[in-house]
View 1 (tube, rainbow, N blue to C red):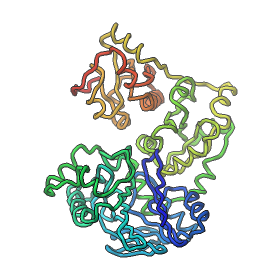
View 2: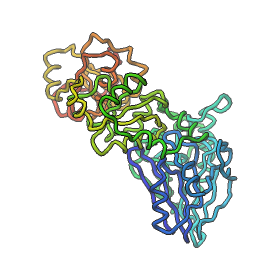
View 3: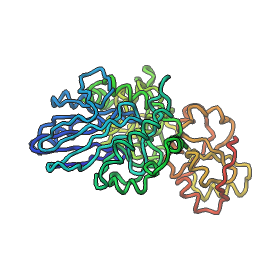
View 4: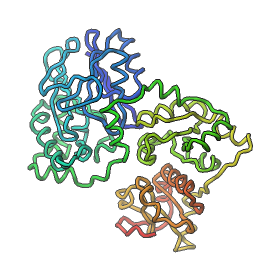
Length: 468
């Protein structure tokens, strides 16, 4: 028996490879299929099943392409309806993989079709569950992503309670829990950095598995939920209805473009210029109106959160050798309309004598000096409200990056703003977006609150109003 977790940190996502006696199954694959196909080939195994725990909202699964390339059967739990061929499983149905068995446990709550897959080993012992977004390490899946006119988040939270108590908690404590996500995913609110655990330990430490009435569970699970990113519904739709071939997306998007061609496409096709370099490199010189989202941060989730049109044409500026990586990571969240990248990067743009823009960046120490001499300095904290409430600069306003598209009109183009986040990544994204919308008086604080905390600037942990 072989079980391998294939964890992708930038998405906080876990896919799984299971193998026995020359037969394999993949659970919740990412968009790019080559790693799974190559792994099976190295092990002289044939991929027989692709198990989907639910209609994913935070990434586009690779199930459709993988099935076409391998002939494997896509399996969903009860209630899943798609525009492509699947096996819609029934609760308790069992599938053979070599000497292993995989049993469907229908566990609605995160979504109506959500299912957990119970792995039974060669000796007939219940070995592990692949819990998707039903049960995380330290948390459970949010129940507000599949609400409809006749199904509320309270209804789904109640279903989740029943699923946990009737299907998962009765299993033996030594059963291993393999979830679909870990810390950093927006599919839950309190996930651990650990990517697997025993069920017994989770029964001890996971707040959602403690003994409580259903009403108390519903209240706890819904407490503190923020609105899901706007791309979630779009990704779920792609996963239900199908999508363009990943290979075709890569072929179209990973194309080097000369400076003149790049500029022409930007001017004639309404393409967004996406600069993916490091923040303290981007700010020193970038193409006017380019948006910064660095490839080395939570790239895909920020793209999905901030670029509201999933069909938006995109032109890429990247460090040399990372262009294809950008196209791939855009496709993971359904942004398939990459039109190419700037050949030679920003240096080729500069050598051609094209205009460049910049964003002023200062140190945390300089910010402290400025605040000491100017009590009315405008400081904007772009972190999440929970981060801001934990500790922030006295009199700083909180305008979270997550909601900048909706809250931009709170800011005045005639006012100078000093922007900071936790480490410098999100504030540079914010600055680039504002700059592209005509805000010129922007100063980024390098190192963010991590650096600010080391200065003598006055800080507080109480919640103060976000007034600008």
